[in-house]
Length: 562
Ligand code: GLC
Ligand code: MG
Image (tube, rainbow, N blue to C red; front, side, top):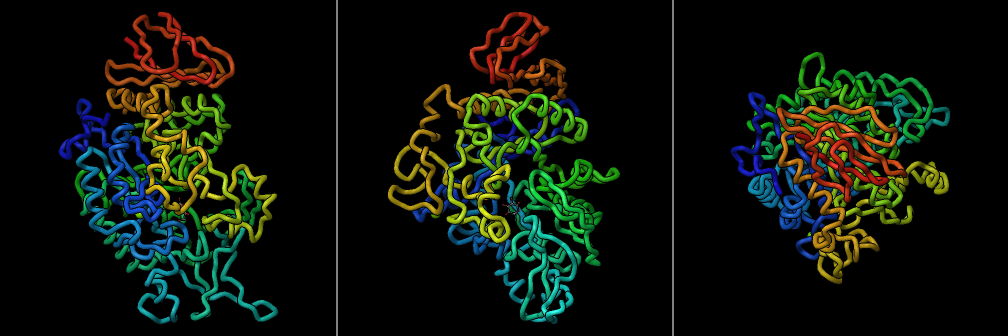
C-alpha cells in the first residue's frame, strides 16, 4: 500500500503532524533501482527507463515512498554510468530525455518521489569537456579538470605532483596526460578525471544542469562520493600514515583530499540551489569519513547542508544485538530531530545482506524489521525484498573495472581474504521477476548483460507474491504498518536496555505507541511488555501474554501499545 498522504502531487511533499510538517525525505523508505539490471523493455538484454516505468507498480506494491535511480545518463559505461559523458542526456540503450520525463511524471502519479544519482566529482574521460581539456594547456576547457605539473626522477621519467592516493586504496590519484605533458587528478578510477570545482565555470555549469532536472520535477539527488570533490587547491600532500580502515589498507590521512572545509561549503551551496524550488527537494550524500564529518554535512554551525547522509555502518556491522544497538544509540545521538539518521543494508557496491547473513532468511527478516521501523530514512536495494544473494562471478571475468585495477597490485588469493570480494557484478545481476526464461527481466532466449542468478527459478517476485510467508510479504507487511502509523514514520524513538540478544525500542507520536522487539540470539527470549493492551501486529507466531512477549530465535515483532 502506498502512503495515502503521498498519493496526490498536492499533498506529496508534506505530512502535517500538529503544527510540524515533516518533509517526505525524513520519513521515506527509498528503493534503489540499478537501471541496467531492473527491467529490459526492448529485448536487448539491458535494462532501460521504459522498463523501470513498467515495473513501478512493484515499488508501490512493496510500499516504498521513493525511488533512487543509479545513473542512466550518456556514458561509455565503463563504470556503469558512474562515468558520465553528458549529464543532460540519457544513454541511448536506456532511452531518451522524454523517457526520463515520463518516468518522473509516472512516479508522481503513483505517489512516489524520484531521486536521481549525480556524479559530481568526476566525468568519463570520454566526456567532450575532458577531450577538449586534455588536448592542450590553453583550450577553453583547459582548467575544467585538475591538471598539474610534476617533477622528473633520476631516469628522466615524470613523477606526480604530490602523494595523493586514489580512493581505490593504493594506486596514485594522478594520471599522465601525454598531450599536455601534465598530470590529471582521478580520485576514483583512471578513466574518471576529477572536475575542477575551484573553477567557477564548472560550478556554474553543474548547478545549471542540476536546475534543469529540478525543473523537470526531480525530488532530489543522491550525490556520488560527495566527500571527495573539493581537494586542496594548493595540492598540499597528505601525511603518510599507513593503517587498516574497514579491513582495507590506507596509506595516508586524507586531510587535503576528503571532507575539506570547502567541501562542506559546497554542500551548503547545492542545498541552496535545491531550496530555490518548491516541494522539499532533497540531497542525500554518499560521504565517507569520521562521524563528526558526516554530521557536519547536514548542519555546520547552524547552516543547513545536505539533507541526509548515508550511514553505512549497518552495511558492515556484524549481526549482533549489542553492536547494532550501540549503532542505533549513536545515530540517535548524532542525528536528533529535526535531523534523521539513515539506514541501509545493501547497495550496488556491497555484498548482498542475505549473503552476509550466511543465507539465513530468519536473520534477513530481523534486519528488515529494523530497517522498516527505525527512526529515519531507510534505503532498500532492488532484489533485497526477495532475498537475492551474491551471484558468484570469477574476478577475471568481471565486467566491473575494480577487480581489474585491484588485480594489478593484489593477487587473487589476497583478494579472497578481504572481508568482502570486490567484484560488484555479483550484486548487479538482473532483477528476478519470475521463474520463466528471461526471469521476467528480458525476453526468453535473450542473453542479459550480466548472467542470471542460478536461483531465479525459485527466488523471484512472482513466486513470493503468492506465498504468504515470503520475505517479500514480510517487507510488504512491515511497510504497510509503517505507512499507517505516524509513530513509526516519524515518532520519537526510545531504545530499551534489555537482554543482550535483544534489540527493543519504542516509537511514539502523540498517543500512538509501538514497541519493536527483535531477538538476534539462538534462544527463545521473553521480553516484558508493560501494557495490557499490547497487540502483536506482525511477526512469527508470537506468543503474547498480557505482560510479556516470547520471541523465538532470530525473529522480530511489532507491537501496538494502548
Ligand atoms: C560510488 C558509486 C560506485 C562508483 C563510484 C565512482 O561509490 O556507488 O558505484 O563506482 O562512486 O563514481
Ligand atoms: Mg533494453
